[in-house]
Image: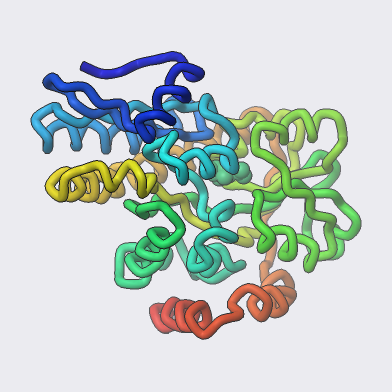
Length: 329
Ligand code: GTR
């Protein structure tokens, strides 16, 4: 029996129960999962797929219910609620976790990965595992890393063809100090802001632009109010599927294994969906009149030295950077 309640009621009960809805009969556990993206977006569909796998593995005892379209709140708030076990599962970007799980910072550093394949290989291997393990002391269990493509600038004013074009422009950045400093280092003015506020920020001129990947640029409809998309590809900061440690600790070791395996199995599915979505989204925005331009990233890369110095500032983080670089030799 799945437990579907209104948000307010769930909050109250979930707080009392520590988040996980439990019942005695056939379907015993429903894990509530948050995502800022709408139904149909690859991250949302991948977590639904994970839920199907988990159901199968547990003979229908454990289900996942995905609350899409930031129904449970903007990313920062849901990250807090996940820590307290009010939300069981959460699919967020690495960036808003940068201040909470330092190791995530490394994967968001500008131009750290040389390609999508490089990012995937690193995340599938021991480096990815070490980053996921680092979630645990912070109160989360890192289950899987998902693709997020490459983030690039878009704005309502003009194509960005060189660093000089960024001077004085105001860009919303994802909520991470690393991104604030990165964009400021490029000569623009960075404003961290919740994702859900960006469309109106662009519309009213509060900000000139933002930065994101193809599927987000499209599904958020930001292309309607910021038609210049300039492919500097400054970060390939990936997505994470994580679980509240409080919710995790309530599962038996067998069920924990099932959750981990189901999450891992969803990664392949996510990648398939992602590749298809990137192409689809590109077509949608181009058909709608977005103006796309490529950029030679050399000058952007050169401007990033202070960011590496500031954010890869411990021997552990420097070691992770070196291990990633070693995969590129
Ligand atoms: C997207 C990411 C979201 C959210 C968003 C943002 O690429 O998938 O989880 O972090 O960016 O810019 O806030």
